[in-house]
Every structure is written in structure tokens, then in C-alpha cells.
Length: 342
Image 1: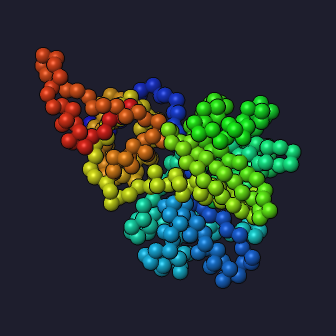
Image 2: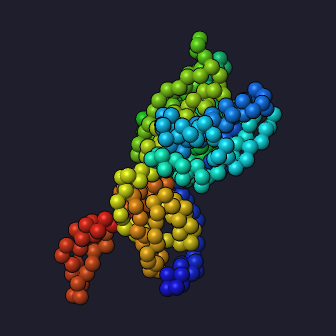
Image 3: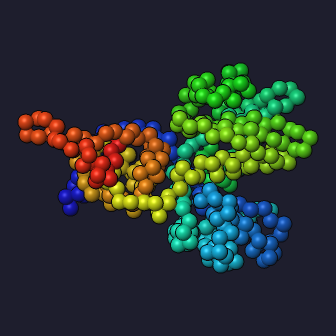
């Protein structure tokens, strides 16, 4: 009752504008698969492939769906499906989120939640007329958004107006520090950047990509027969490189205390959603300070909280009655497995 009263008090605090890096993925448990007909055998094949796509989307592990523990589920994927419909030559499958996550965790798989870093995709296609950026109103944008949905990544596209076409050059897209690209990207308020340069070759299409997230840069190459296929190949690779940072590995978890200061109602709601895989228990509310107990690895937890742009701070120093710092207070805070964020 006392905790409920303190939560109600938290609701009375001034609401701050949320400026989180994370973006919940819409339709995370919906998969679209092409079909040649509506025959039962074709539907069974599409449902199995849809499950494989979903498992990859949730784990980032291309071998996960082939584990022996999932053999029975792949043989009868209908038990995980809440509904499916045909849209022309596409089978749209909605999986039941609770049933799927329970089954995958029972199989020992580490899962990536719905809050994921939002990527601003600077996609440049090299054509005979010169390099061209893909904007959110162009036809190529539909390929990228379809690939983003399939791979479970929240992706935004720039306007690619005349100014951006002039400022974002091939050299800017390949700069290791992305300093100039970050300047152009400020207007979008997204800190995770994806730079892609796509070229047609004698054997099809090839792309080199780079992702800048926080202080880190990831990079790779992808190939495909077509531009839509290349879009999917790039985002599949990006997903597989990002997933290990954010998947929740229960086997590495320990009991931690998490203290988040300067919270408000919006931040409380974001934390509840983000921390759900770690079995959080809200133990204390003191003004704008929230204290949780949960099961997680410290590095796992830091990666997740970075999505909300929370800043880790040193443990508070306890003071003696005469105002001096209490000896060993910092060491005790670390011994208690406590992490402090603002």
C-alpha cells in the first residue's frame, strides 16, 4: 500500500519529454511469407519458414531454429500461431507472443525484446548518373521498410532532399568516426546510424555497410540478385551483429540492485517494459528515485539501459553524522551488486 502511494506520487511529478534511443518494434510477432498457392502443403512450408524467420528475429542466431529442442515446433508451427490470412501471394502469420517466448526460453534460447535501437538508414545507390540517397518518399523506401519489418529492426529513412544529397557523399558514409554524418543526422534525433553504399556488379548487387551505435562501429558486406534482396541481406546482417549486445541471457544473470534517479511517470513506464525479461521487482520509490531487484548480467543491463539514454553514475557516498564520508561506503555499494543510473 505504501509503495502504491509512492507510485501515485511519482505520477504527480512534471513529465519530461522522453528522448530514448529505443523504439518498440511494431508487429514483432507478425511474419509475411510468399506462397505459390493456398494448398495445405504450401501453407505448412510457409508456416515453418515463418517460424524460422521469427526465431532469427528474436535471437539473432541463424542456427537457433535448427536446434533439436525446436524440432517438434517446426513440425507443427500451428501451435504457436494465433491467426493467419492470405494477402494475394503472401501468407501473413501472427504468432502468439507469450506462447513463442515461453517455448523459446524453455529451449534455452536467449531472446531480444521489442525495444531495439532505432536506425537512421543512409542508403546510397551508385547509378550511371551518380550516387543517389534513398529518401522516405521514394520507391526504394518500401523495400527497406519491408526488410526492416522482416528482420525486426526499427528503421527510419531521411528526407534525402537536395541539401542532404549534397552533404552526404560517399566519403562521408565511409568515414570511421561518422562525425559529418552525425551532424547531418541531428535533425532526426536518432543516435544509431546505418550507412550503406550499394553497387550493381556483373553478378548482381553488392553493398558495404557500417553501423555507428554509441562509441562503436560495426561493418560488413552483403550480396543479392536484386535491390529488394540486397535490402533484406543488409538488414539481416546488421540484425545479427546487433543482437548479441541486447539478447537476454538468463544463464549469465545474477541478482542485482538497480537504482534509477530523476525518474518520472514516462521513464517508469519505459523501465517496466525494458526490464521485463530480467524479472524486475520494484522495491522502493523515494521521490524520483526507483530501486529494483532483478536477475541480469551487469553488461547486459548496461546495454539495455543505454537504449533509454540513461547515464551510469557512481554509488552515492554515505555520510557520518558529522558530515564526513563513511569509510568503505563505495566498496559496500559494489559488494551489494548495485548499479546506479540517472
